[in-house]
Image (cartoon, rainbow, N blue to C red; front, side, top):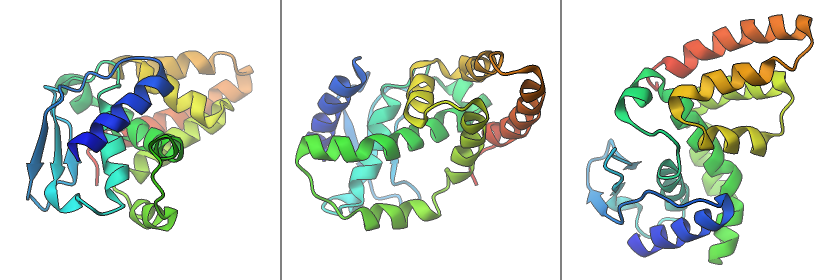
Length: 189
């Protein structure tokens, strides 16, 4: 899986136009509560049971995307985990087909759809999608721009985008934003 992570890193660096901060260290775990994680030191931890399973690709891409996330630190993450996990998970879903195509990997999308149907970050993605739709911003631009923005200023970026809305829509957006913010600040369920 380390070589697969390296291939994903190279593909994402080309696609995103910026370098990863991955340390190059992969740690394997047998902890059933962990599919993958990216500690703040920028190593990647993966469950060893993922090896050889097609579903691993979504976890590898997700964890590698954390290494491209601007301002990834414990304090900002703990203050609003949804601004990180929701953004990274949706970017994984958006970029996965292109990443796998670059790697020449043919995996059954039904496996990914099954894993994502009840994913623990879906609430974050729904909250972010309500904001994106209220702003009428293309999905890829919205999420990739958020990934490039430091976690602590992602909310401010979204509010700044809302200022271009007509006054009546802006008031409605602020109500939507308030509701979304509650979800994005909660720990995942």
